[in-house]
Length: 216
Image (cartoon, rainbow, N blue to C red; front, top):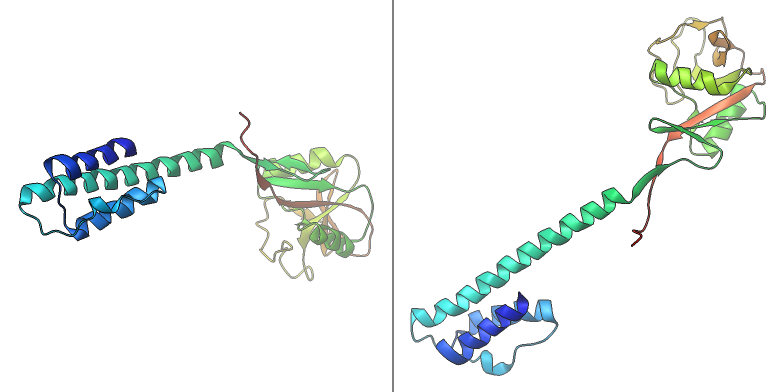
């Protein structure tokens, strides 16, 4: 396309039209050098007053073609970049974490109290586990095994509502048994106990997205 336009300009300059205005010539030279990295020879940029509207018409036509080429090329590159990004991005979880839906979960083997469990999760850029649906809760119950695990629900007292570690209020999707201030998963569902009790725990955080290079 650029070669054709360049030849068209030569025809315009050497054949039908040999004289263009300084303004038109400079605009064309800028567009040509932008895409080719070369400069048009000075003989095509002579500053001579136009002799007729027909002489300018060819130059304006070449500029219009170049402008259209620039727009088309920009759109094509943009679409190609978007396709590359979507095609090569993958959601991943860290080693020893389990992915479910759009989250990653870590099931500990050690035992700590609720506060230290939350401290561990925060060091992993996570929080004690949260769930927003029964499907997520069933997943946690299935993977925790026979042991009890701390999750991210807590409250100040029995007179206060249950909240997650990010301070959002629990929607009471499933009732919580007991009179404690910290919640954990047991074989009976969700139970509550005291902070100082040591248990295993579950951390959760959003999946990470990694872009892989395209393999040809």
